[in-house]
Image 1 (cartoon, rainbow, N blue to C red):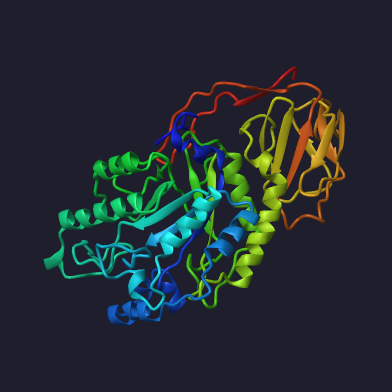
Image 2 (tube, rainbow, N blue to C red):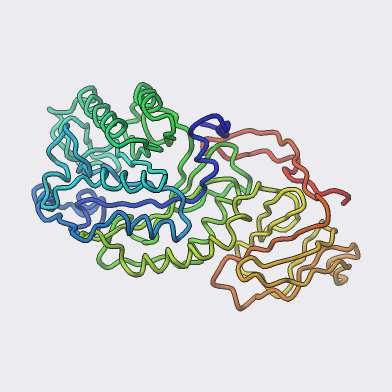
Length: 436
């Protein structure tokens, strides 16, 4: 996987645009249970596939979708062209099980790509390696698979189908900014698929869930505890506003805004990207609770974005309750958990800033440089006082410190990597403080 893209690489957009929107939408929205309904609930094939005869989203409006996405600060879109059910949301020649053979009868991928092109907005397409509809796919009842007749299983034939479909997606819709694979359950390797994507779409990034290594890793839902160390390789995490499904669910339970803010803050402050997902209903409308969550997170992200996407500074301050980013004369403190009180002590940091500002509200914090109480020792340290300890517990607070001169100097860090692309060795800090 890549550590970064040089500016000359057309995929370098991925390292500049750090927060994207994930949308799961297909005929599973008709059932309103789960995007994996057949596997998780045992819905019979004939019952499920009849959903296509009821799929007629007359309220689907790509412009309103993009308005919502951009207003909430998202910078690129990943859309489910084909999920595990095998239903295709574009006009494909490879299977009649597609959106053109529904009452709606319009190319959803085409409509979305046209709107994205109008706005110069990056679009990636999700493609499931698992396919419950195609007879040649070896559904053996493994995770995220059903069981189908092994007499028809033929991986070579299925890969011909996959390559033809990926070629369609990469040639019929103008510039595509990525292919987001999912669930290569058999672990099949075929680097020629990625070679074809790169040759047809030089802007396209490819994740690590497909038929080759890919450009970046994709941890999902819950954060993998890595000791708050920056990612050694390109990483994009993802989660959904819904607790039970990624697609529309009629009686969904929703995550709190603060929980999702914490995930976004954690991943971006460690150098990664983040995808936040929501699923529209069968009419093409996002549920009101999902839109409310997206609005609140979008407002917060707009306030703190520059701090979250600044370079990570691990080890700069001896405090495990927050993360640090910044460079030069600016240091950002990302408080993953609510402060225990009105004062934050920066142990090991003894430079007084010219300004300390809470980015969420724009208000200033009181910064002092003085010894602590006898329990904390006599050495001076920076204290940030009069924080809104109770007023802002429903949001991740971010504090920006501005100094009179550059205080953060990059330092090279020995790197060893695990399979998730996480830096394992930080014997030296990536950011060091002058004159400590």
